Amino acid sequence: MKKSWVFAMLVLSLLMIAGCSNVKDTESLNQVSLLQWLTLWDYYWSKTIKELKWLWNIGLWTFDWLNWELIMLDWVVYRANDKLEIEVPSDDEWIPFANVTFFDNDEEYELKDIKDIASLKEQLDSKVNELWDNRFYFAAITGKFNSIYIRSEKKQSEPYKPLAEVLSVDQTEKILNDVEGTVVALFTPAYMSDLNAAWWHFHFITSDRKNWGHVLDLNLNDASIIWDYTDNFKLHLPDWKFFRSLDLTVNQDEDIKKVEQWQ
Ligand SMILES: [Zn+2]
Image 1: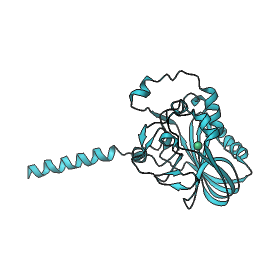
Image 2: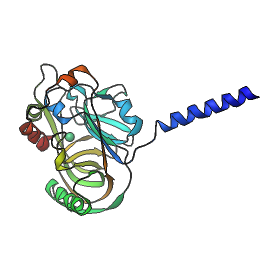
Image 3: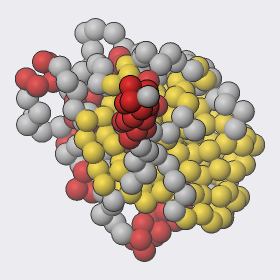
Image 4: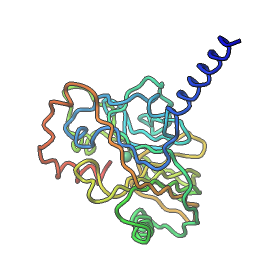
């Protein structure tokens, strides 16, 4: 009798520990590595897709060797191939750099008359000004797009080119017309410019999950926008020798500026 009671308590404790380790953190923007790590041509592993999916369900950036751009939505990680069509990579693939969070709905409303990416940024900026400039936001913009202009970079091999050069010579582009889908938007504040590309970053995925890419321009009449406000930031540094010995004091402002324009 006593033995079975001890066993039951042990099982209960183990279940509680397992449950606690998978608590969804809804209020942190998580960053895997630094953009400056990527712009120094080191397109290597930091975390696996499986690790990303353990706690987070929305995110963006890229795969190892810049093997095309990454979008994560509803717990699924997608890659766009050279036709900007979608592949679902294996959970064992590595990610050199990403921003991810557990998305929750803090506010939702309709967006109207977005004639181009500048007018989208204008509307989003005025909302951020009203909310608070110095925190992080993820937003999901879902609707029918009159047109959307997307791109992705191509997989690199050694000797690697700098990211800014990759984006100017090794990318593929496409315009989709009358297409339903979701733009995943990330806002990082200006003070993040030593760790990331500050301000807005947009990736788009079609509702049928057939196409996606980094957004260069768009046009839409109306769409719903859901905002996730995030007040905490967690940085996950790569745990390997090369990263620890890297000189990250090199000034990369010019490269980051190019990446902000293209990535
Ligand atoms: Zn991108």
